[in-house]
Image (cartoon, rainbow, N blue to C red):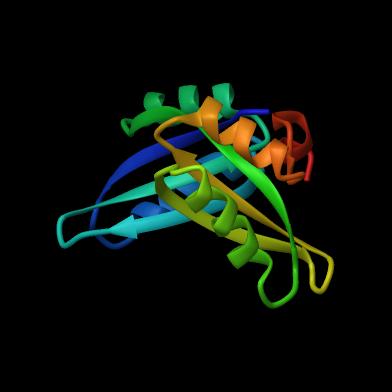
Length: 143
């Protein structure tokens, strides 16, 4: 139910993102989802890939600082209000979203929202109680 995500700390300079994606590509690692947040000096690249352990090892060997965290990937209806309904459940459970990012699988069907909660187990319980589907790691890595 929990999905592993890797986070890479990047100097904010030209070419670093291209370098990472090239390293992953050369090693047969496929990116399933990503988010990049930056400040003036550095950025945090969050990735869900098909092989987290291999990606983490290879990136560390190439001098990158890499961490691993657990996130939830929640399926929501892809129509106006789909995300709002999910966030209503989260608000009612008094859960804090540390960050989130999303992508659509097929327009008009479902979207996938990747959430980082401070209390993951409580989030799982609240989302399941509301009837929302939480994807397994195997499902996400195989997308």
